[in-house]
Length: 340
Ligand code: SAM
Ligand code: SF4
Ligand code: SF4
Figure (spheres, rainbow, N blue to C red):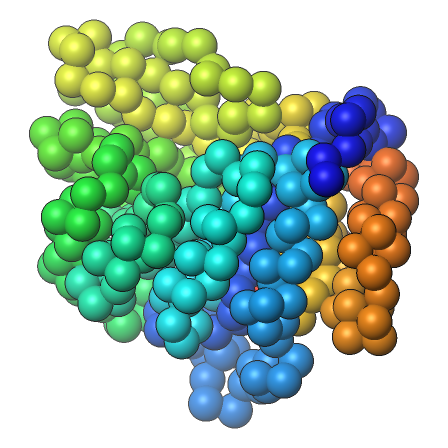
């Protein structure tokens, strides 16, 4: 049963998007997310019994949909390293009221998984690819993959019928900023919707410095100088990307200015961690546990009541405050834990 009134937080932001992180593990070691020197063989990832089962995730998703979620996104860690993730997709796709189920993936396992995901009912795929330069890309992912493996994954998604495919690229100054125009040209030619993401101070482990951020404005200017752009309207309230169209009609591109132009005012996202905690902000310090009540036999209505309470007290606007103060990093949850 859907609540008839939208669930609003302290700034009147409705709850609409649910991001489900299905695992804290990953087959890559991106330097800005899970640096290899910190996430080596001795790192303790969550043991299996701590993870929500597919049935638990699906049950929570049903409760979230009742509270207003219309979009679900599976993320991680790397969602495709969770065994048989397509079974979860099929369970979620069968829920009443889901308009859109998407996945963000590094693409490495898509050649094995794309077809099964499509058949299970996944609507959209976003693949992260930071550069087409093999040396740069390998350096950024901790040497776990070349560019070709990810391109093969994207091709597999296309072959399985996913369209349009979105590509995410994080830009770091002095690391891959000299390769953004090449990536933009490639995606334009292929018909992929590319979204550049400003490097964020998520977590506490990536050694973030404001100087390493290449602003969305700078990125737009670099591309505009070679392939003229014009700004277009957002698709809907809560869309995070600033959208541009190529003036020659060759498709569009998005810029996610999370650092220089934060969008907290329209942030409608709730994040569910692999072990069943909810976070109302990407920069949350502590989650609220739902797995405990769930495993202790709470009813759907009791769980819904916890979520209503959390969302209605929500005052998060971390990025806006960071911009106001050019803030110093505070303790917060890691990105690979709640999935971006
Ligand atoms: N493993 C999957 C992937 O990489 O697509 C899903 C999880 S990953 C945490 C989700 C997205 O967050 C990716 O597009 C990744 O590039 C982005 N991301 C990770 N750390 C980031 C950071 N510090 N700043 C900006 N984006 C980041
Ligand atoms: Fe893994 Fe994605 Fe983080 Fe890279 S960004 S380490 S692929 S979770
Ligand atoms: Fe939403 Fe928090 Fe990001 Fe602001 S900082 S847009 S509230 S997740």
